[in-house]
Length: 96
Image (cartoon, rainbow, N blue to C red):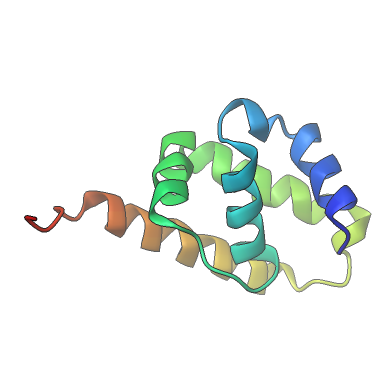
């Protein structure tokens, strides 16, 4: 998928006002494509909130650009990304 198309979806959902654009792209890639999300972006994703995160994924799936994706797979990846980030944020940092 072209970056221009991803940017359009992100702007339509006003994600850039709740998360920095680099982190939105990381989260998007980890859910809709293949990639990982950094600790920093996990913090921003958790800060976005589960309801907004889920709504964004659902709205993105409604976009005709994603009609070839299997919604169950995307939802599973979305939940996995959310849970991984939540566990990362909730776990205590190791002492330096």
